Image 1 (tube, one colour):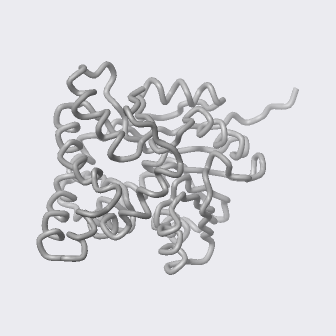
Image 2 (cartoon, one colour; image 1 turned 120 degrees about the vertical axis):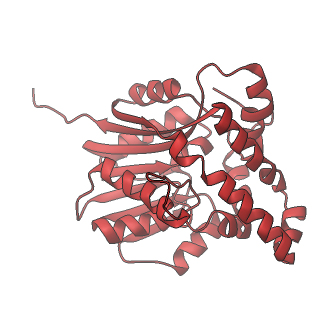
Image 3 (cartoon, helix red, strand yellow; image 1 turned 45 degrees about the vertical axis):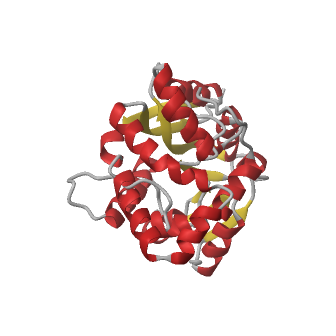
Length: 282
C-alpha cells in the first residue's frame, strides 16, 4: 500500500473538494471521474458517461432497486443511473459544496447526504447494489470501506469499485516521484494494488466476480484535463487567482504526475465487480 508522507483524513478530503470546487467543475466537469474510451472517437462527455454505463451494466441494475453511490461527488452518476435504469440512489459525499450543487440539480429518486461512508448509518442488507467510482482511494480505513458495503448490501447484492491503483511492485523512483506525491497532493490516505483490493474485498466477505484493467482506455482523461486547465488559467482571472491561492493548490501539480504515472505503468485503473453471497437455508 502506498501511503503519503503526510497523513490524510476525511476532513482533509472534504476541504480539498470544497476548496477546489470551481476548478474541479471547470476541468473535470460534473462527474469528477475518468472517461472510458472504446473506439477513441468519443467526446470526453461521451467517455465519462460510458464509464457510468459500464458500472450500471456490471451491477446488472433493475428498475426499482435501492442503490448506494459511495463518494457521489456532484451526484451526476447517481442522476444518470436513476434516470436510465429506474433505480433509487442514496449518495454519500464529504463535500458540502458538492452536495449543494447536487441539490440544485436534483432529480426524483436521488438523495445526497453529506456523510462519511465509514459512518453511513444505513441498515443492514438495505441496498440491492452499490458503487464507488474513484472514492475508495479517499477512504482512511479501506478494509472498513469494504466491510460497510458488505453489511449494507442484501445477499446477492453487487458492489462495483472503479479505483486508482498502484502497479504491483513499483520501483522506488516511481513511489517517490509519482505515487506518493499523487497521494499527498490528491488527499489520498493510501493507494492499493489490485491484489490488496481483492484481499480486502474477500476479507470483508465478498466474492470477486470480475476485474478489468482499463488503464489504457482511461489515461486520455489527464491530457484533456491538462489542456482544459491551461486554457482556463490563461482566460479566467478568477480561476487563476483561486489556483494560486487555494489551500489545496498542490493538487494541480498532480496532473503531469498522473500523465506520467499512466505512461510508465506506475498507476493502473481497475474495475472490480464484487458479489455478496446469497444465504442458503440449512
